[in-house]
Length: 248
Ligand code: SAM
Image 1 (cartoon, rainbow, N blue to C red):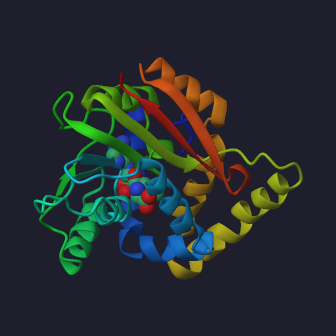
Image 2 (cartoon, helix red, strand yellow):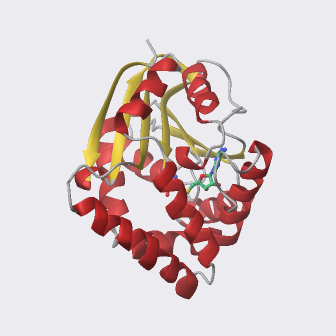
């Protein structure tokens, strides 16, 4: 057993998470599509619709990985009448993921408005009150000290800034939860073995989903970190959820 918060000491968990994402970085985007049947794209589209990005805004996408949220944010924000667009900062723990994200940004001609950095959600290398929108998409469950990360989110948001967390959550349809559980325990590690040649990493992913707090418990922790007007929306019957909050 190598991934539980209780069995493994915190530094060790962070190192292991980094190991998992270093080893899957090159295959990460493909695996996302295969495992979710492409549904992660719809969820991300819903996240962007909830954000309603505008030109002139600065996004901080924590655990931003290969850049999915930043690209969508910038595309949706567009430019204003003076030609000014939005900006995005991607901060991720794993250098390999940031490197893939940088290559993708170059391929898309998006390197200008994106700042890439390697850093930990628990102690962000970002100034106080400096961003309009904070996002963390399929990232928070990998963070060792979730409450520290949430406090950091509040710290870097400007007053009036908004927090968004897209994460796997708890299925709310009776019956469906068991089918989903079976799928994640059997199909996902096998797919990881065949496609990414890395069964263990995908076992870690499934286990991290199972251990993550459910919708109301996460909402309480977001509030405890000082964010306000916290709400959530379930996606696909609670397989995932978007939690939102404000720094007032
Ligand atoms: N946000 C992307 C998406 O939605 O596709 C990537 C999500 S990927 C499942 C999780 C990412 O979290 C990995 O890139 C990993 O390196 C990053 N990560 C894990 N722990 C982190 C931490 N403590 N601080 C910042 N990033 C972290």
